[in-house]
Image 1 (tube, chains in turn yellow, purple, blue, red):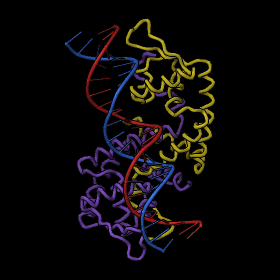
Image 2 (image 1 turned 120 degrees about the vertical axis):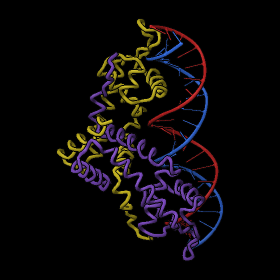
Image 3 (image 1 turned 90 degrees about the vertical axis):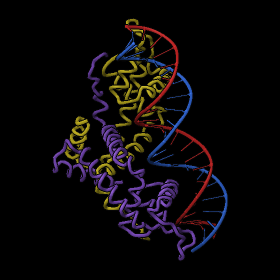
Image 4 (image 1 turned 180 degrees about the vertical axis):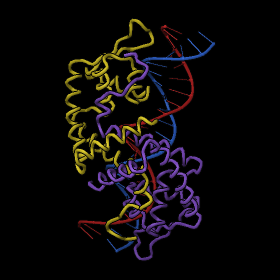
Length: 147
Length: 147
DNA sequence: CAAATATCAGCCTCACTGAGATAT
DNA sequence: CATATCTCAGTGTGGCTGATATTT
């Protein structure tokens, strides 16, 4: 083998799990690059989005609804408290819990991240029509809902 | 927030890059579990598939056609040489290169891995019809071809 | 006691970088 | 000299585990 094109093996290309992984790698490259200037990571966006939509939450709930592991939630919240995007306070009605709340600055930051991520999505899906993008989203959701 | 369902935030669910990542995580869980008993990883399957389809290759070409980094190719080939799935020999016509060749045992192993991975795909896509799976594959390919 | 929460320390895979040795 | 290959060492993220302290 000494070709220039270096085509992907058919057996790999035929594997949905492989294609999905390659697209995920591309997606992560794009989103990481989009967020780089902000000093925030994808985790942070996920938690800010949850706090914005659902209101103040315990760290455990935050982890459950975003699919982020409990130990990673701790680190991410620490980072965001430090930058003033969220506040952490003990739950008066349940001594085990911390209640995490998004701040005004945090909401602004969320909108900022959201816009940047929007651009990255467009770039990721540039080869698809609007209809195709919708179809894609629907099929992905179906897969996720099936587990 | 204290609901039991812990729904995913709408902003996350609406992000293709997020959905794709979640599906990729599920896919990796399934394929890793499927391959666990074999002692092989996804990288190994990718390289065996390339060697089987394209014939003996340099490590650089192997990395290029599978999307695996040059340094990771080294480690994976080491592991597979040790198990007798591939052979590594210097290229007589180019002193910089090693030529990697799949062995008979390696081909058997490839078929084994391939079957296990096939089962994992079915499990991953169990919520989709055959037509939908095809649509999915086509859309993913289009995205990959656009980069 | 059992279950839930938060925290900490650490593991492993994977994608990736940098640098050196060698060959073209 | 520039380029290509192979190798090694190491980095950082993401997903995850186990253990501990505390509360319910």
